[in-house]
Image (cartoon, rainbow, N blue to C red; front, top):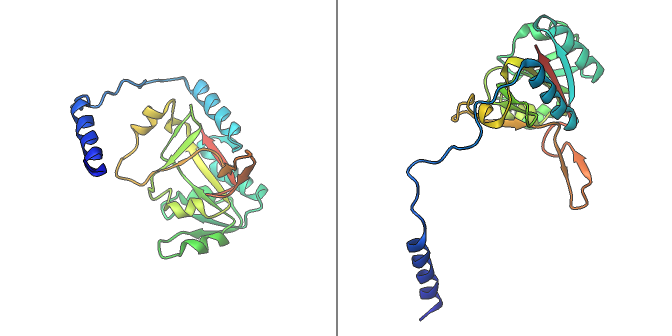
Length: 207
């Protein structure tokens, strides 16, 4: 008997002994969790800060002033925005606003000091922000190439857990999950920032 016959025989035995595949995938993990606005906000901020993101809070009428203040403190002069972003958000910004276009090569986005986007949904338990490529969030490259990302997150879109957040996403859309500034570490656990995306993440929570 050849080695090939032995391997194929073991595969046949494994298939025979394998348990039947369930017709429906069990969904027994926790779902439907809710929290009050204060608890959800506190948990979300705690996770964001733990990930070294900068957090700012404001009301809906104060978004322009808050964004102008955040961008000024970050030293941003030339800021990119997706085509569908609410134009009133940057009325207080005195620098140059560049509307992104698919025709702009991704490497050219590195000339921007930062980018401002909206968001789709967020998870308080993990401090994760979900972008799905909607017109007010733009293409993935726009939020990965510039070194500064300022993301506006309405508190109403912050869910408690991952299952609740995932339920609000459209599976067919390209999803980017952001948990703090881009960072990685080597085998000696030395943190390196900015490897896979922006080194600076500012989250403006609108309540």
